[in-house]
Amino acid sequence: MKMAAKTIVVGNFKGGVGKTKVAVMASWELAYEFNKKVLLIDMDPQANATTLVARSSGISNIGATIFEGFNAGDLSNTIINVNENLDLIPAAVSFKNLPKFLYSKFSEDIQQITYLKQLLEPIKNKYDYIFIDVPPTISDYSDNAMMAADYVLIILQAQELSLEGAETYVSYLQFMADEYDADIQVVGVLPVLLRAGGRVDMSTVERAQDIFGTDNVYENYVKHLERLKAWDVTGIANQDQHDKKAHQVFINVVQEMLEKIDHFEGEGDLDE
Image (cartoon, rainbow, N blue to C red):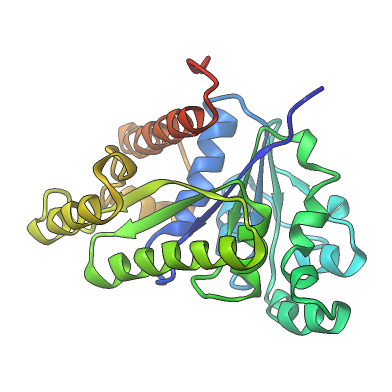
């Protein structure tokens, strides 16, 4: 029997740190380069992950979105097949009404924050990995993602406010574990550099190593690559050396993440 997907939420409680790009690209590389079955769930009403994946895959028609799935109590009809290995549950601005919906549907806190976990149960066995992209807020979105996930990958942009956001994220994870028995582990802190080799950037990374432990901060950084910004306009491509360089950054990140998951689960050597 196939094991249920390892579910990973990508987050930080500061916006604009690159978490959506990491969620999309980790899903993309796992599907295309590692030949894994992957589901990317967009839980942000801004739907930036949805837009990037749709643009990259020539998807022009987004039908039912995650909010329709929440309303119906079934996510299966919201899944968009991107390619053989990658599926997407898209978001739309209507998902901003999630808090109101949860409060009207459930009277108990635990029911409100475990609804996504409940909805994922029937489909988890179809995938090897599920990634969840959430808004950078302490909210029903992040609560549901945390309760549904096995791991959290914390994104650290190399600046002070992002470091504080990462610390807050860890504190809130501990709160969720204490208050609601959330069973989630930090699968590392991934630095996203503003300037490769910049003094402030590296100083922030060193502080993160002091706070979270050297082993918990990724050796593979996401450097500031112009090609990543270009992909926002063109969609993800793999045509020239600059594209390939950008892909290799995320392939390395994914490999390190898989090794960390493997370490947590004690499965021995990876077969990737």
